[in-house]
Amino acid sequence: MTTLRPFTCDDLFKYNNVNFDPLTETYGLSFYTQYLAKWPEYFQLAESPSGHIMGYIMGKVEGHMDNWHGHVTALTVSPDYRRLGLAGLLMNFLEDISEKKRAYFVDLFVRKSNKVAINMYTNLGYIIYRTILEYYSGDQDEDAYDMRKALSRDVYKKSVIPYTQPVRLEDIDMN
Image (cartoon, rainbow, N blue to C red; front, side):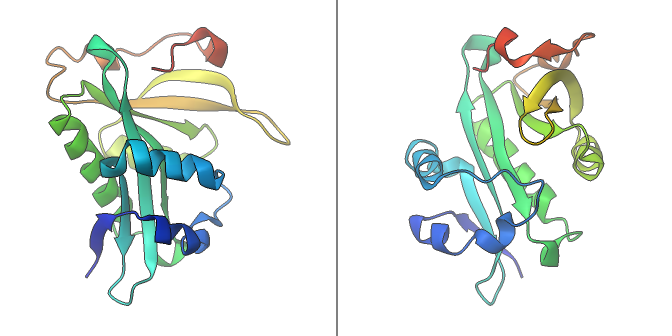
């Protein structure tokens, strides 16, 4: 039996095994504590009956007017607990919170090379809204897909009309 519960400051000392995946972005402690302070309802953890961290989701709500949306900053599941539907459970949780906050859509960024995640998000109802050139930096810069799912407030699904051309990070409003 999996328990979803709010992520706490104490969990910052226990979640490293989940972050070992090379496709999981790892941030500094101050980044995580900022999310805990500003958007605690968007930071949830999946825990096993024995108390092991199975995965977590970290997000926020941002934007203005019809760009008001939920954003998935990080979603990761430990390799030991993959293919059990936990990522979908965590995504549904974040979508429900975003609905309660009256958001128009939920978005996320994913590496173009992460085919497993792209397939999962597509199966959860997300579309590729646009490509952001060189979004991820590192040994080799990599493009990202900005994927979106319209929520009930976006009656006409305007938030998910895809761009036809790639964009650069500096050319978009991230709010």
